Image 1 (tube, helix red, strand yellow):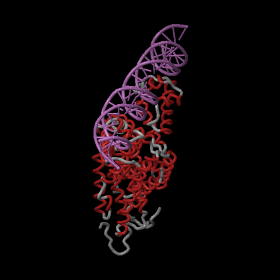
Image 2 (cartoon, helix red, strand yellow):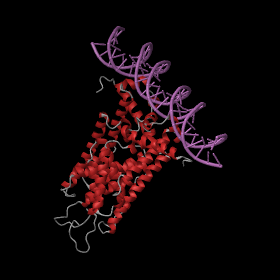
Image 3 (tube, rainbow over the protein chains, first blue to last red):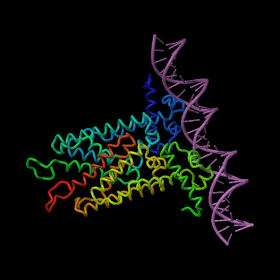
Image 4 (tube, chains in turn red, yellow, green, purple):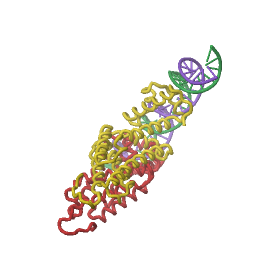
Length: 210
Length: 210
DNA sequence: GGTAATCTGGACCCTCAAGTCCAGAAACCG
DNA sequence: CGGTTTCTGGACTTGAGGGTCCAGATTACC
């Protein structure tokens, strides 16, 4: 992808990406100019184009990749180990907290709007993120199924897909309205749905709750 | 809001809004210029500023209002009469079809990203849309509750909120990935969740399905 | 019909930000 | 070291697009 980059060069490149990401997180992608990035990162125009020959587009794509990575890592370690109801709840809380803090800005969404979703590069970034996210959730569903906590007849991928949609929509509504209630409602409903799916106890155990 | 507008003027103004909306739907807000709108609507620069003195911002806001209205009317008549499971299913199908057709562009989302969500005007548009949408869904939930089809203990607003989040996220994922499965999964899960909440039949009627 | 408003055409301006260029400093490599 | 590549600084070009202006056409209203 990038050829021959001395340590110094790599550091500068990274500094540019992180500076641009911060700038965009604070002021939005629409108002962020290369000059803003230049000033913030203490670089010059030529450096920007040295490391991102395609110009702004390429830089934004790199920032998008960076932000997509953040989205997932910010949910760890919970997202990677959804093996119990408690783990699911911890994950839920982490997500709510993460986005409550982020508030009304969603850098990734903004970036995508800007880049145009049809660009192959943008496409790849978002597809990768969605696929990985959904896979983790599906794995979590399967864990619960294996533990007999969830109806084994449930389609794990489809359920994960629906939970993911709820999270996405909740975040979008948080951005738009400033209220976190949609996100909470979506997460709670999703988990509740899992819980209630528990198969009618074939062998004793009439209790509703574990 | 707008004072003294002759019929002719009103027509021109509307033509501008609709032309701009179409342009944005086709090419995205980021790439749409006033000149594009001008050409498409057969108007001149001075007309644009005559009808939208604040310039592009004001025009985009008008377009956003227009699109927000479309979002709701496109779901009618079903959204307004969610009084039975069949009505809910019809609504579900309408939504899926509507967004499948719309494909990867979401004018409203793009508009919002562009306008900045903090602008009071943009704020009002999206809040109005969300509130009305959620209210209709909540009304639908209450209908089912009144008919004894849904657990009366369920918080109708919160449930509506969660369904709405699912739709929003499903649409966003449709835009990003091009696949409609998330939206379908979210809607189906939401409705399924309502169905399963049905109180254990106190008086006979052991069947699972109506 | 007159006059006062609204409406329209299009040339012009002006800012801002992306992108280019080249020269010079620093780092790598034999 | 000497040559070559990578890296950096900053002035310059370019063009797009939002916004202004004013003169002239059209319409409303008495």
